[in-house]
Each structure stands twice: as C-alpha cells, then as structure tokens.
Image (tube, rainbow, N blue to C red):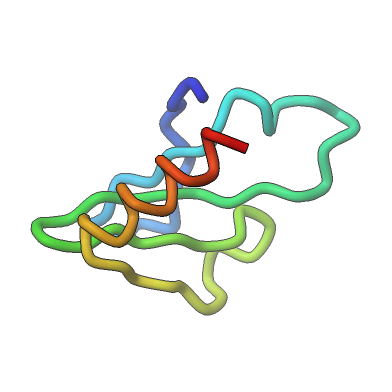
Amino acid sequence: MIRKASAGNGSALEWFKSSYSDSSNSSECVEVAAAPGTVHIRDSKNAKGPQLSFAHTAWVSFVTYASER
C-alpha cells in the first residue's frame, strides 16, 4: 500500500488512503490517520461519517495479519 494524502474535512488529523483506491473500478476505500497512541479509520466516501479508533498495537496486529492473507 502506498500512502497518499487525502483532501480532508479540515480536522486536525492527516488522512491517507491507499494508492489502490485511485482505480475507477474501486467503490470501497478506507482512509487512515495516525495520532499519538491511536489510529483512526473512516470511509473515504463519507469523511464526515463515523470513525473507528484503534490502539497502535491493535492496528499493527491487524495489518500484519491481513498482509499474510
């Protein structure tokens, strides 16, 4: 995954989405923003909608697991 800065909603977080999301065939994408001690995730199509937050250790465990699949 290559991180690319996203045009955010003006919040203090700097959101990134995968370069794979630039495909015109892709209708599903999440954006990720790192903050001290927390990783935030949101739907790129609904930037003002709900967000999930995870501890860094939980996010690293998830990414490690997902990349092995």
